Image (cartoon, helix red, strand yellow):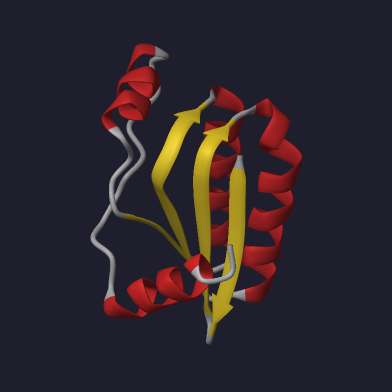
Amino acid sequence: MGIVLDHANDTSLLQLEGVIDIAAAEDLKAALFEAIKAAKAIHISAEAVSELDVCAYQLLWAAEREARRSGCEFAFTGRLPEAVERALASAGLEPIATRGESPEMATMSERSKGRK
């Protein structure tokens, strides 16, 4: 399980890796809460997720709603792995929106990778 939160300027990058399930819920919730408090933009990288359960999906959905209500941008970078998208679809959940990674986000990603 891996949840890494990095801040740069007014943007937070939350990188998710491995299995993000009920066991990771408390850490995910804390990271999302901190990101919403600290930034004007929150970007989620979930390309390295191997499993994303309904609990994690609900936390991400609720965080997106709260961020938007607070006037904070909330977006996903990259793409979810196909297996994760299939699992979400089979559970009847809409796919999580994704978008390409900006140069600023790439820089934040590289800096965060260096801390592992």
